[in-house]
Length: 199
Image (cartoon, rainbow, N blue to C red):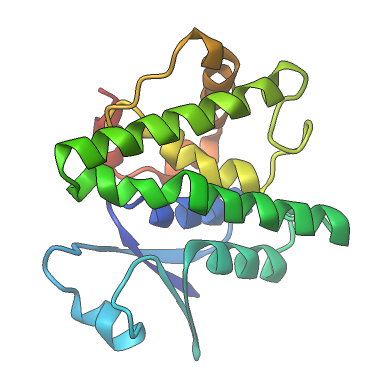
């Protein structure tokens, strides 16, 4: 059985939980309090970070690597396209998400006020640009739910929590977010602390 060491409010951990529930497979989730250095994480992961996936002798960290492994190991439903071109495009999008969106989260959570406000504006501007995609399609890759949707959902859930307010020009993006949040696997993937972020 796969074991996922997961942060209870960590958006990267939620990505992995989301994929595991989408696959509908047997797995174990161990909630980790990162404020009190978890010994289990340090023993399994040299960086001492979540998420960390353990399966027999295999130990993986980094959400995108974990999720691709799960997708290849349990291919139904398939979240990465079988087409090499589409897979490459998906990986490029995931790379962009890390460098244009998720890399700013630490500044919001731990940065000084000016740094945090700049990070919020950067995320807001980049998300607003994405909104146009959803005028004609249901998900990031046309009408097929994919790893891109998995990756961005935890950030969209946390917008209010992070103090990011989107304007009317992002209305299509928020309708898309509601479609993601309504998925049974997304609902199942949330911890009580994550559910409380939107109360």
